[in-house]
Length: 146
Ligand code: FES
Image (cartoon, rainbow, N blue to C red; front, side, top):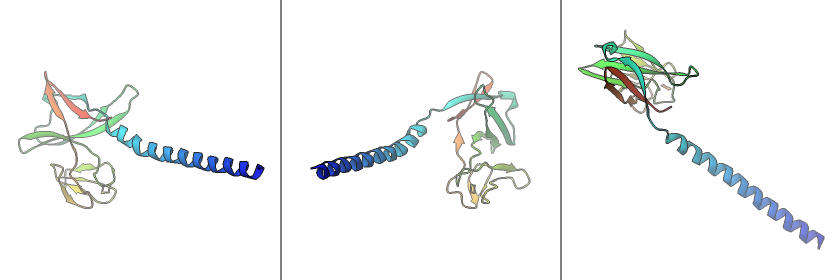
């Protein structure tokens, strides 16, 4: 009788452990989906007069009152003005703009993007992400998911 009781308790403990581990794994899959649901917030970054007329300008935008910053590129090219994310679409390193090569260069694996953010070399699978950019009452705002 004691042996049967012990076996029952052991089997219940094993099933409880399996249920606990399964719940933990499920939570790991659900958590990133919640992170992706972040909303876009518009941050003031320039005045309309400060918008570049030609070329690429990097801005560091303060995203909270603790001094955290994130970078964006404001690009004026072919009569268009748009904002690009500096995050490489390969593995997430931060690209920099080379005026000499007129291209965004990723230091990690040699990814290259043209001035519009299109991939022109290396392993990146997609163009740089375009960020929302708007002008309102003389101020320029860029949209970020932070
Ligand atoms: S992270 Fe940019 S090329 Fe790999």
